[in-house]
Image (cartoon, rainbow, N blue to C red; front, side, top):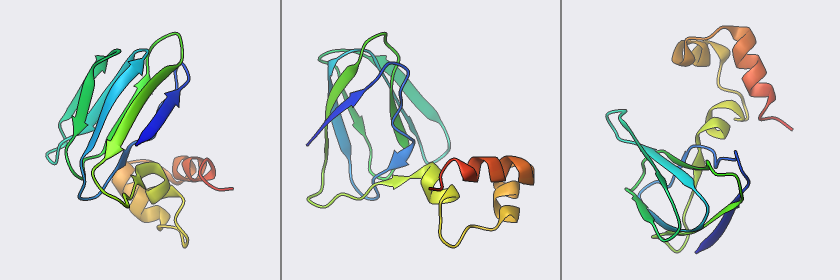
Length: 123
């Protein structure tokens, strides 16, 4: 179980838990919960204290604080040793780096934009 606190305007990065379900309940604040289906449809909803959410196994999802005060939620992942795959880190902080040409094609962006994004995820 995880006790997650998010500052106003903050977000958990888009991520997934391969093969396992995530469930959570909002303890305080207003939380935007969103997930993408396998056919690229986004489902999202703002929920509040006492509301619960369930993210199906392996889907990319995020949580964000859309309120004016800190929000807090309790989450569980249905696995003793859950893994988390952060989408931005997975694509932009790999060692060795994914070739710029691949990311340029995927994001329909230029090399300057890819390099700027990449710089945000390196130490």
